[in-house]
Every structure is written in structure tokens, then in C-alpha cells.
Image (cartoon, rainbow, N blue to C red; front, side):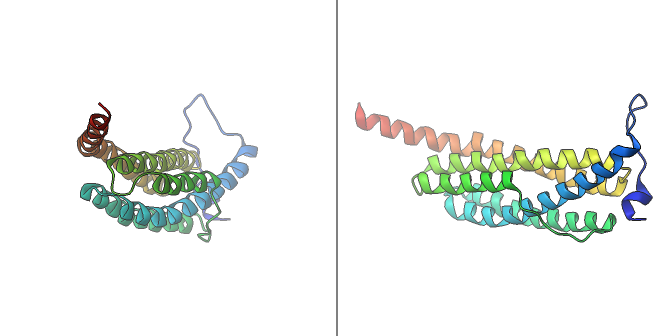
Length: 194
């Protein structure tokens, strides 16, 4: 009997139940989703390094550096979740995150270096990464609760909360720093043509 089987107790609302035949496919999906999320987090570290180098805003560079450090903790937590369920931490290519990260690279190459436009575009790319991670962790938390994996659910919930905080921080940076620089650039560009 593995760790999931030992800890399986459904926590669905009283009017819902999980059928016995549904538990094993749900366990398998949970493990696959953990592998997928591990790959996404590992590749996000590489992307965050690129994002740091590509922007001009010191605040934005610091935000990406901080999230890079936080992402290392997310990976450590994922390793602990794998340990809790008795599985080896193995990553599986996440095609969705691969596409989002490729788009981030394209944004860097297609925007002017040293511009507020690039900073704004990179924030949007970073938020796409965050939104994917938020949805992934939200689903993992729900499944962990359903499978009765309370410790795993708490660990995954902590990461989910940090991802949500990072998304809010990026929004705040966009609103307070980038938008002012971008307005100045646009206005300067418009004055050239008037």
C-alpha cells in the first residue's frame, strides 16, 4: 500500500462522493500533474533569469530575482509532496508552459531593448506564467484534499498563495512604474509626428 492509499479519505461535500473506481485514475492524474508542474517550475527559473536581464526597471529586476528564489522553494515543496506520496520526483514536459515560455522569449526579441514597452510586455508575459501556475496549483490543492492528502494540500496551498501574491506584485509594478514610463515614451513619440 502506497502513501496515497494510506491517506485516502475523501473530503468532498456531503452531497457528493467519489466512486471507488474514480480514485485510481484521480491518483494517476494527480501524480502526472505534479510531474508537469515540476517541469514548469524548473523551466520557469531559466525564464526568470532571462526576464531579469531583459528589463530596465530595477523594481522589476528585483521582483524577478525574488520570484526566482521563491520558485526554488516551490520545487523543494514539490519534492516533499512526491516524498509524501511515495513517488520519485520526476518532471514531465509541460507543453502549455513550454508555449508560454516560448512566447516570453519572443516578446523579449520583438520589443526594443531598454524600453518601457519591453518592461510592460515582459510583465504581461510573466503574468501569463503566474496565471498558469495559479491554475495548476489550485487544481492540485483540490485534488490533494479529495484524496485526503492534507499535508500535501497545505504545502501546495502555500505555493498557490505565493503565486497569487507574485501576480498581484506584478500588477502593482505595472500600474505604478511601467505605465508612467510608457506614457512618457508614447507622448515623446507622438510629439515627433505632430
